[in-house]
Structure formats: C-alpha cells, structure tokens
Image 1 (spheres, rainbow, N blue to C red):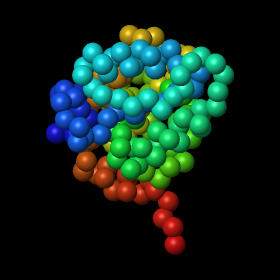
Image 2: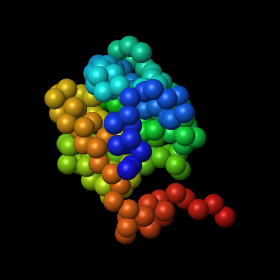
Image 3: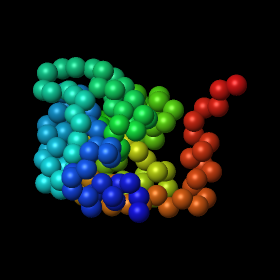
Image 4: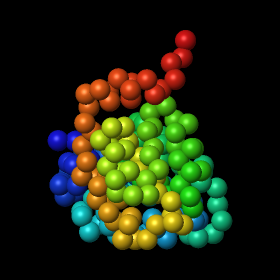
Length: 162
C-alpha cells in the first residue's frame, strides 16, 4: 500500500507518521482553506506553511519550507496552490527531492501519482471549483505509484553532482 493510501485510510491516532504539508500564496488561500476542511473531514493531519490571508505575498516564501519538509520526511505528501499553479510548482521543483505535479483534472492527478510518483500536488487556485479540487484530491490520495518502468525514469530526475 502506498503512503498516500495509508494516509487516507488511517485516522491521526499516531504521531510517528508524516503529516500532509500545505502551502499557498494569496491567490491560493481560499482554495487552501477548502483543502484544510477536506483533510479534516478525512482525519488527515496537516501542517500549514502559509500564507494565512488573501493579502498579496510571494509564493517562494511558502513553497521552499514545504519542499524542505517533504524532502526531510516531516511532511508527506505536500499540497501547494497559487493562482495558476505554475509559480509555486516551479519553485517546488527546484528542490531535488520534489516531484510537484500541476493538476487541474482528476485524470492528471491520477497519472502524476501512477507514473511520476508525485510527492506534491499543485493546483491552480484561480481556475478550480471546490468540486473539481475534491475530485483531484481524492484521486491523488487514492492512486498508488505503479513502479516498474517508471522507476528508472524517476531516478533520472535529480541532477547528478560531480
């Protein structure tokens, strides 16, 4: 069973497993509030790295701490939201241990987990209804990484330093 499925099936009765990490900018704040409720309804613990209002802010200030938490195992998976999803996703993917996937449909979320073992779900806050976000979240949390031929591809993603 994948860690994402374990997160979805387990209630937060243990303190020894990672929690879901959240980050957004001002344009993603309202959708992040919905995501927090979605997680709470399913008993999934989360850590919110900000932002905390709709006041204009810079997504890297919140993306980097989320990425570091996913990389060091404090949080898994991550969920990040900005207006288009592009800026926060680009920032997250600067981190070598992050495979952030910009998803605007449930099918893309499914493939991001199945083929790419995405460890951060990125959503475009200005372009999704809460209904669509719910289907994306559900698919992301319920899809296991397929492994197989995809493993060698994922292993080639991080830059090799000489």
